[in-house]
Amino acid sequence: MSPLIGPRRACLSLRFLSLRFLSLLFLSLIAVARPGAAQVADTIYTGGDVLTMRGTAAEYAESLAVKGGTILFVGSSADVKKHAGSTTKTIDLAGKTLLPGFIDTHGHMVYFGKNLIDANLFGTADIPDLVRRMKKQAERTPAEGWIVGFGYQARAMKEGRPPTVEELDTISADRSVMIVDSSGHLGAGNSAVFARAGITADTPDPKGGTFARKADGRSLLGPMEETALNAVRSQRPPFTGKLADEAITGAANVWASHGHTTAQEAGLGLGNDDIGIVVNAIDKRLMPIDLYVAAKDSAVDDTITAAYTVASQYNPKPNGTREKLLADRPDLDKRYINRVRLGGIKFWLDGSVDTAWFTQPYTTNPSGKTGVYSGYRQIPDEVLDAAFDRFWPTNMQIHMHMNGDAAADQALAAIAKAVKKHGMRDHRPVFVHASWLRPDQIEKMKTYGAVPSFLPSGIVPGGDAVVRLWGPERSSGAMAARTFLRAGLPFTFSHDAPVSPIPSVLALVDAGVNRRTASGAVVGPDERISPYDALRAVTATAAYQIKEEQTKGTLEAGKLADLVILEKNPLKVDPLTIKDIQVVETIKEGRTVYKR
Ligand SMILES: [Zn+2]
Image (tube, rainbow, N blue to C red):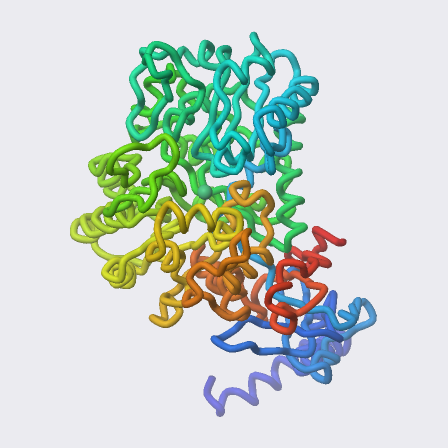
């Protein structure tokens, strides 16, 4: 506006303005100039450590103000008073610590929820103990349902092996019985479950998995690995109605109780009812916290015989998991709908401690493996390449489960081909676990912007076995957090629950800091990191991994008021006690979703 016209216009306008309007204008001008109605906080937190998690060193504020689900202010106690109004609730932290809400970068919340309904087999001492727990489960399972248990560890049981068909038949001779170990990669079934799935000793093993057979090869032994287990698991009758509600809300509440404001299901479609459970949660608005979903790339809803499940799994045909979700919710992959977002797609390239795929043989073979054994691949190169061809140009983030370096080689080769064909973009492929990486692989990950999500808590229960099976070099260099830190590369920590029996973020932070096994040995002392860096791996960098760093991961004005209050500050306790710190309260967008 020209200064010559300005005053004249203002003068003209004044004639038409009523006194009342002028006074309103005056009041609103004051509101802009000073913190008025728009700036009054709903809640102010003060009186404890406010750890912002910004930057590479700990930064504290005295107070934090929240309004309408977002952070209004972070700063001094003197300045926060500007945001206090008659409606503001002031919460005295009383020496407790306020942090950004924890972000799950690799967990299986839906799967965990279903396990809450199944028998808990964690800490099973021996096969009679397992049978006893499963018989109790049979009593509470409706006649038409499968009797399922989860969480045993064969090598930790007295017999050092999983149970046989005959042993599982003692739980029920005519009802389907299936058990899955704590890794989720190995399991066993009784006669009825194999009959139901149409699997006999003559059924060929699917690619990337095996059905164990007795020495004569003429009957099934009971145990099954990887894709063979998936073939049976996918035939389980679906969770619907109240059971579906209970599974997801039960799990979400457990996640919230461990300080998460964002959960993850990194393999939706592992069960044939997963999609239904999540869509049900969306429809009924059941989620108290955000859920990032990475869909398993398989047409799991196809009712095919077990022998063909894997073929379908490897067939990225239309009408698979992603298409189904997108058909139901066309905008699901762009933003959260009722707290659920489809963010990515998930592949399994190898197995777990016993079945990781390496370029060099195991130092000690796992039980049942003879000769030169290096683990094995789960998916042919051409299948992975085709998937990259399809998803690399999209907004779907690609997650790849890998433990061994041969699996990492496969991932890097697939990325290289996709980059050559489609170019580079801000894709942030996730290397899930990435337990053993060679230096040349870390260099390539840097080029492609790949983010590893390490599972340091795997060291605690499984570390002694890792040292024995993988040998000293691969175990001490496993989950190379400090190497990544030194190189200035992003990495995150994840619990992979229910692989870790509970989704405890503080146990994870503790494990990354201390790297102690169950026997007390320190595995790879050079890869230990500071409590602050470990906390970054579950907050700021975790937000970066899921591409939500604009709204989550640090305490800054304008970000979501996703918060956790801890009884003690993890940076100020004996590092060996970080796992024992209690989560006092979890707040999702300003609303308390868990309180101790
Ligand atoms: Zn996982």
